[in-house]
Image (cartoon, rainbow, N blue to C red; front, side, top):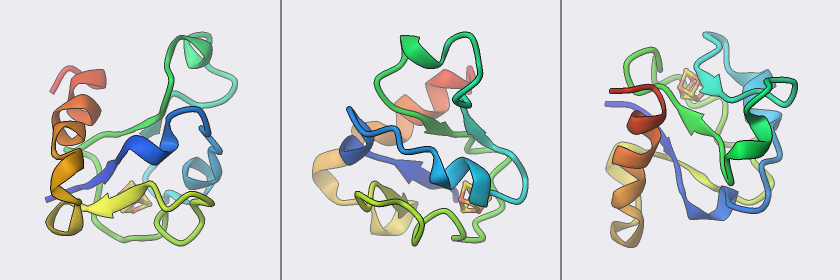
Amino acid sequence: MAYVIAEPCIGTKDTACIDACPVDCIHPKKDAPNFGDHNQIYIDPVECIDCGACVPVCPVSAIFALDDLPEKWNSFTAINAAYFGK
Ligand code: SF4
């Protein structure tokens, strides 16, 4: 299981989650050259250790444990994984 960043991130990209993540598995970072190329940020489903630290810091409640992901945002599981080629 992993955590997933869903639709509310689009257009927000707050990045507080990136600072909260203890294993540095949320990308792209604000200073990454490709940050502007993406309308949201993503969680690496393999590197995520399911700690939940990113959830409360998100101002738009965009992050969900896979089990809690609203069905309407199911496609975001693959969208997050695809960024990392997974
Ligand atoms: Fe990082 Fe923990 Fe959030 Fe996974 S659940 S993305 S490890 S902060």
